[in-house]
Amino acid sequence: MTCLPPDLNQSEADFTVEAVPFEGDDPRLGFAVRYALGGLKGVGEKAMEQLVAEREANGPFKHLDDLADRIEPRLLNRRQLESLAAAGAFDTIHADRAGVHAAAETLLSVAASAAQARESGQGGLFGDVETAHEDVRIPPHQAWTVSDRMAQEKEAFGFYFSAHPVDRFRHLADARGAKSYGEICSQPMGMPNAEGRVMGIMAAMVEDVRWRETRRGARYANATFSDQSGQFQASCFDEDACKQIEELAREGDCALLHVELDRLPGEETPRVTVRRMEPFREIANVSRMELVLDIEMVEAVAKLAAILSGSRGGRCEVFVRAPIGDGKAARVFLGDDFTLGADQVDAISGIAGLTVHNLARMEAKSDGYRTRHRRSAMRLVG
Image (cartoon, rainbow, N blue to C red; front, side):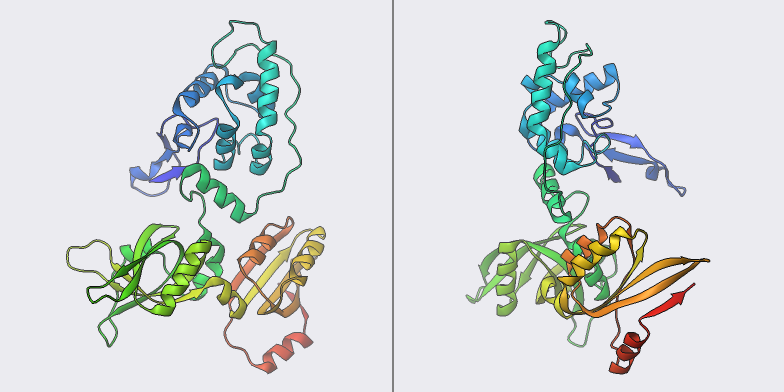
């Protein structure tokens, strides 16, 4: 069942089930779980119950000023507001999570002024008298990157909610045919190789590693990995791969795992043994990808140039397409020596007025092909 994000104007203090649009004949698809405001770390169910009561009595919160006018700051604190902001509970009234997070103290200060102006005895946690007060001003702040947003969500939920760090390397993982742990568990194991082993490729983040000893005294690593489908355990007996796992665990980094899968009779999930590791930061430096971008606003060009100028030294090709009228677009070849790691792709994807048209792995191409690209750097496409 789908889990909807927490929402100041939709969520209850506890988890609830909502009807949602769906396609198909299965009526179970028409329902989703709405994440509870009180289910977030450091928020508290009692305070959220009274916030929901205020919302139900006097209507949805329209914006931050409206919220500040109606809450009782003595029973809410900065930590609660920051957790709500990090989880995205304010998104429908103010989409800048980093801004709301930075404005938590300001919001409480404005709420305190509004509370002082209300008549005494007008209601416990939340008042019902509309009182004029100063606006909630968002202080100067640094916008959150995709990584920042995921880290903040994990802090608020206790786990990755809307995205996972592995998602940042999806273009590289898909190019290698990697599968998630959930996909591997839900599909047949496949045919064993000549040695009777079923091999696979997975993309995952290393969360924790512990050293163990076999009965013969040999050391091996037992690690906790995670991807967008959940956590899983895997063992590793290769010394070099064990060292890589230990290093990645310290950094909370992601890698491509070459694994051996073994599902014993009666077991629902396979046992995973890591045979080899490829950290994504290394794959990004050697992978050959083709990135095609649609330019919709001229202002996006300068921002794209700033990112690409610091991303030389790789083996990836970048093209841009710009409309020139009559349903046609000019396809411009920008170069074939760029590095397209997760940071670069995140930054490029965040440019307003620019859309990623395609990002795919390139097949090996000859020097003649590359020379032709340089000679025909611009061509028209329908």
